[in-house]
Amino acid sequence: MTDAQALVKTLDFQLDIQSDNESLLYDATLEARSAYNETIRLAKQGVDWDAIPDRVADDANLVKNTTQRVVAKALGAMENYYEYDDFGQPSHSKDGAYPLRANYEEGYNLSLTDDGDVAFRISAKPYKHVKGVLEGDDAHLDVLKTALESDEWKIGTAEALFHNDNPELHVNVTNTKQTVRDKQDSRTVVGVDVNEDNVALTALSEDGIEDSLVIDFPEIKFERHRYFTMRKRVQNAGKQSMHDTLEGREERFVRDRLHKVSRHIVEWSQRFEKPCIVFEDLKEMRDSIDYGTRMNRRLHHLPFRALQFYTSYKASFEGIPTGWIDPYKTSQRCPLCGHAERANRNKKRFKCRSCGHQDHSDRVASVNIAVKGIKKHQDWNVPTLNSLPQVRKVRRQASGAVDAPTVTHDAVRGYQTDGIVGVSD
Image (tube, rainbow, N blue to C red; front, side, top):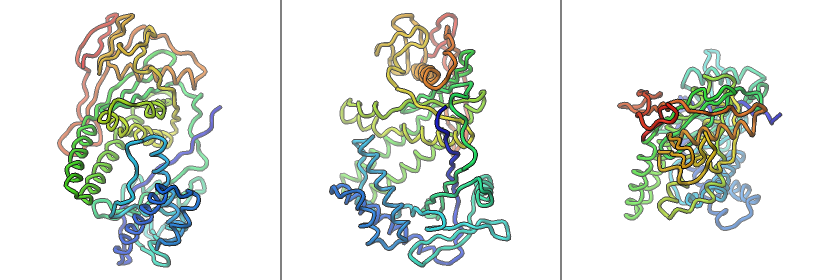
């Protein structure tokens, strides 16, 4: 038996401030930025990380535990930089607002009103509070009201921030009684291969492949490149404030798209009997990347971990467990004969040099991830794979924002193996 995973969800709300001091909340987010910058500066100077929280808290004009939460997030960003990303060292010179991170019943509080609303009180500064009611999605409000009234739920850390100049509160809630199903109690393993411009999914059961899908999201790659080009231009022109503004816009755009893609992954997985979602553990792969400065920047900054994290916590809230496997040769191994070499893969085309099997290369990787997931997490045997079904591809495209794929079609007819249509991309 594996360790149970908690049911966790982040709920997003807009703030209807009724205490006539919205400027106080904004001032507090500026103070949070100052605390964040000071934390990063001290960490870069080599100050003992255990000593940083007290040093920053002594100078910050914030509630002490709120300052400590901001410091912890800043140190987390530094830890992530050292562990995963040699190209994204956190900056200590940014200005503007930064999320005010607070503990429940210390830095902020929530309560139900007689009218059925959820009232909030945020300690923006010591002994100075911002008050009002939460507004937002009915589903999120229902979950929060349940959490306020039920002993099975725990309300955790929240962040007060400004999005498009509008105040918001993002609240973490955890179900303390219900846990995610044990991975070994799964009847379907969903292999997820995350790439620069798509995510490939394959659902594998004891009977074989249940279904497979490739979700294209080329807009993330396009927008990230566009923002990078703009940031370089304004940086060369010495306009640091504009550089930071563009960086924030890019982060919000990518985060929004990743949340939507992760939701599609979970919804697709729910179609199958007792699914378990399996990802590649990409830490070692990122550490070994060295393809030159330009390609390194692109690959190290890909939102692999973010998409995996968003999918994992959304899946846990639906009771679906997640697992991790070694990514070694998942994109090079033929799922039919097992032959593995780099020459098998050429961009989006996979052609086995041994048996001649041809397929969409990312779908091949998702099949291999699912196979490894079964071997690692399940007590049933990997089914025999004599052939693979035709790949289906969906692409998020429409005028304006959409919340689901608007075009669904079979992949372009390509080469065939054993009478099964493959993919030509």
